[in-house]
Image (cartoon, rainbow, N blue to C red; front, side, top):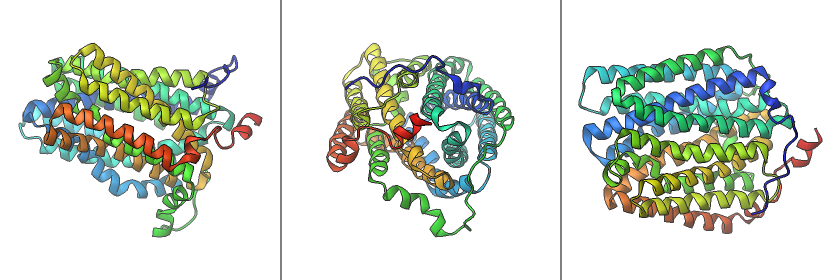
Length: 418
């Protein structure tokens, strides 16, 4: 592929001078750090209690089921109510989840159904948080800073994704209760930071709630083939290639590593994504947008295949790093396409549709990976996932030629003229 763009201007991170954006970024980083630490503890704790691959899949399903039920309502809420308040409330609910997980651990229970019940609450909070979080960013910064704001938000998010699993793995040496208590403290800080932001102006929907308004975002996405292709490509590629859900078993059974090793494995996709997103902040993609997106998804699938073929810890780390970098490119392109193309008054509902696809590819992908591993075995499941991702990439390039051949983002000229 060709170079992403010319170097940015000298005032590279001017968007950080925006107080609201800076506080939002702070809250997002601390909240993500807490959730990532917690995810390592949950996976390892559940696998230690049951030793069942299916249970690793159920962790994803418990989060996705309420997400799927609530997400369209959450999108309507993000277009009707203040998005800042929704985010703050959801962070508070995630704080409650950490405290409940801590209580479960201190109880000494050896049945895991309470963990799945708690994760249903987490999935509900995530359902309302995702559309509001995706939509509020466009309200916080001027259009000329938006691409940079997206890349910077992604890079700091993935820094938290890098640090979180490592900290979670190290803290787990003292027990899962140490992880959950620390996560709760971080989420408390995150909630306070979000409450300190000022409500950003937004064009609110004044339409009464109905099935018609509820599905407005879905109709809008279906009317835009480029947007539909980008969102669905990410859905099916990551749905089949969700090897990260199997990392607790992969670390234990294939690499013979402990919770610290699992933390390192979990951190590598975030490391790849973070490095890629920093590069995108300084060298945003301007040309050959479609080629970059399909190339990123293809790299994701290829790295997953190699991961399934290796028993080397170092090679596994490298594969997960490249997997994260490829995923970051597709996420960046998709997010800009959705936000540039969507009117503000329905941005929450369109972001909800986008969130459904993201949630399906992540949590439902975890469930699919757990089921596939239970049927075919751990290594075969990872290999099949990578091969399926490659098939999806080539199929979507054929089915959505407008997307695969896209050169520039919508409103590219408008953005640089502002």
